[in-house]
Amino acid sequence: MCPLPLAAAAVAAPRAPLRLLNRALAAAMSTARPLKSVDYEVFGRVQGVCFRMYTEDEARKIGVVGWVKNTSKGTVTGQVQGPEDKVNSMKSWLSNVGSPSSRIDRTNFSNEKTISKLEYSNFCIRY
Image (tube, rainbow, N blue to C red):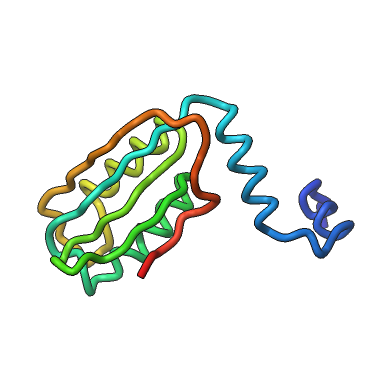
């Protein structure tokens, strides 16, 4: 087994919460390059097709933070934050890919801005 610095730290301090690890990641992301935040709303067949679950998975793969939730009008809305290139990758995914059974008619982006630090430590589904 190949020892990893992270694994060694986890063994040395088994009670250190994962939240601290997420905060360290967020801090590293905020100092690396300019950060962006953008709100989104996805229209089409996006409810009842695991869209939120796939959005959460994709956001974590790309390395952005934020949230996603269903709306009462049949759309999916949320916010994405992270380095500009990663936010742009997520915007593309939200506009063109979605979950396998979804149909994206359009995606509206709003409130896009540069931020000095991340407001979230992970990406989650809101209810």
